[in-house]
Length: 455
Ligand code: AMP
Ligand code: GLY
Image 1 (cartoon, rainbow, N blue to C red):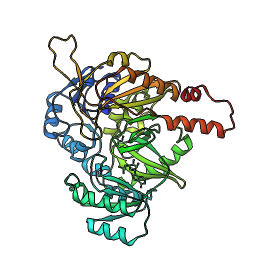
Image 2: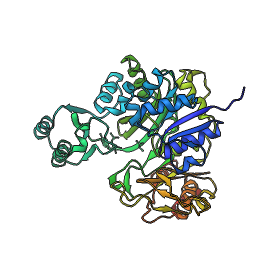
Image 3: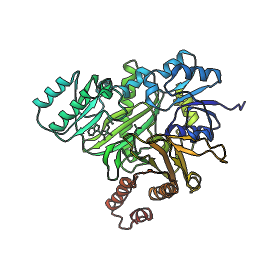
Image 4: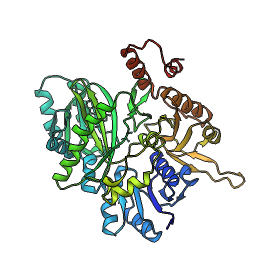
């Protein structure tokens, strides 16, 4: 009865490496399309693009794949799950219609409104001219200007005043890379507070909320510099305690899943809430329809029970019958190592060294985010080359957040390629919050973890 399950993981980033890594531990035989040099070590890479839906259907069919897991948003929004279903194949993730929760910020706001879910106040415009007119007529205040559609994290402009907002609208209207995404423009109130991520797996009825975490979206230390896909994450975050997590589940996740079902677009897959913890409570900044990257890496190293079971039950709509997942007590930290030039254009093909030494650091998993093999026929092992902007997601578990951070950066120090860089302060916000909570609790003695962090 124990035939190995064959699972296809679609994508080529650190998120997909982490998913494949966990599924292999769960006993699955894994194919990755297209995968990277990291997934090649634990799974079979197949050279099919993550957005070539007909070729992915054919791959799943011809190789007897019985579950496909979709990492990135683009194939979800393009209808991969619909195409697989039509072909009688099982795929984890939302349909194209439900993925609009991420794919269209205006659709997202409509669902939030239906579910009475707290979010920033906003106005929606169908042209840049309308948006400009609105900005000129209203008081000069901080706002956020957003393109409606997917723009790989680049369609959001956090503006201090009217002048900046007008500039953002002009950028959206004038830049060809935004023309599709900027068919609609949102202008919303700028929220202040701490940003956290809460992800849940849902089959459209039952919700399994995962531990809260914090991403680091700005390129440089101290949250400065341009916005990126995420430079690091840690889990769990002390900004969300059990009570707040229950509140987020009840006031945000549950009503969103219900509103989707009532709108006849039931959502199944990963519901990822990007939240601002404001003085009025948590509010939704955005939803993603998939695991975050690098959040996924920081989450999955902590998952002790089966991921495969959760994914299967989501596809079969039987999540209510699955026991709550078990999480390791340890904290995790993921540090993204990026190529020179990221988030702008980067040089590919630089050779990476020190991967084995990094992987030997206790508690560390080096997930590959954009790597490929070079060909060197004479070498005993093929060289690994950097092949994109975010190259590696170095992830560590530790008995405390401070120790996890230490282990992650110990591993980072082993890895080299020309131009490699990373943020040095991943998880520091969490460490400061741990100290603040202890101080507030009237505990004068600093914990070992905080002392280490300060040193
Ligand atoms: P989004 O893609 O909508 O999550 O936006 C990207 C980033 O812009 C978020 O991670 C926030 O840092 C910031 N952001 C988005 N909306 C707001 C808002 N209403 N107020 C303040 N910051 C925002
Ligand atoms: N790290 C942010 C995202 O995956 O959207």
